[in-house]
Length: 466
Image 1 (cartoon, helix red, strand yellow):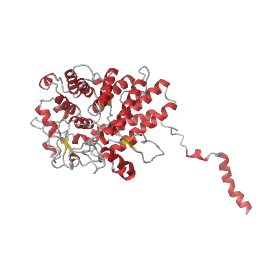
Image 2 (image 1 turned 120 degrees about the vertical axis):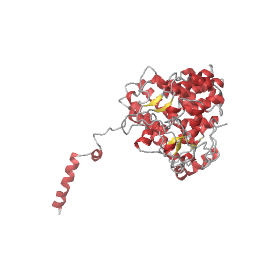
Image 3 (image 1 turned 180 degrees about the vertical axis):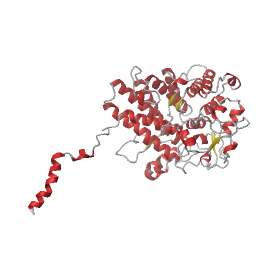
Image 4 (image 1 turned 90 degrees about the horizontal axis):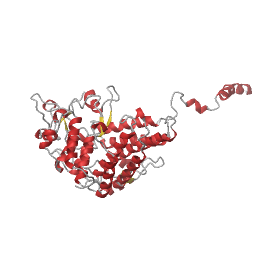
């Protein structure tokens, strides 16, 4: 019996002699032992831009809420049914899991990433990663209100508390100011891994200041003191001065990195959207040349939109412009037109010096130029600067950026978008928390809901004081 036992042990002993570290057998020598920070950054840029750009009814329905587009057959989203497709959950997951978490991980890798050439580049990389984190949290707090922040990525805490939205917002402004100060424009950053600015730190600094201006004006009604200081600081630091500064994400002509609107409409073979009458009627009524850049003309050369919330015959109305549905049409995170309009508002409020009418005119022309609509001089003569016209121009220029249009119409109440007669609720001024939050993080969900005044689409958020 002993002989058989020893014979059976020999192969095992032999194996142990050759591989003392059995765990190494599970290592794939062809894979990177760690993920480069640049790869995580590129992926975060891509998912972030896709999330704010897509027209998928599963993720982004703001063009419908803002009555820029209207659905044809399935009109749930035009009538504010948000939870049915878990749209709020999809946005929440995309920003927390796929954007913010990737940016957080990249920040932990940068200090030991051997591929980064110098300490100055490391410092710039960390600042840029944080700028995009601030950008992402901006959309979370202006959409939901109180959200997980200080405990959001604590691996030892599966049930993070929700922080006060206004407190988060002030901290975001503090972080953004620190990031601006940290950026060294004499050094590089992510290089070609940065799809938005190609690693150009000067452009990132302009972007950060411009976004700081945007954040300042967003809270102009709720915290004018903070808004005034932030706006003045942003403008003095240097904001966008032309469309060449726009924060754009260049999509490619081949999948899977094409324009998501192309994917949603053309590649998918869908006929789900037509123009909405609310926007088209305003453009037509003001002889706005952008109407032909936003939508297609009918056979008689006119532009026609469907009523908000109503089922619509696809062939009876104008369609989304083929410019917008091209596979390479870029995603846009922030542009010169928007920044000009914020400067006009900042002048009117006394936050900065200048002439509001000139900034207003620069914004309109920037939007005209971006869409290839020509010279806006004649248009401006009959649509001069007024506070109301400024608010309308923001809404028009934010075409294809419905999320931003929704933030502005909530805080300015212009245009006064009326809920369709078939809507499931009043016009939504916030999104409810994802159902998963109430199921999994119930105690903190209930506390957050009570703190903001109820988890309802009609609960106004901290910045919305009109």
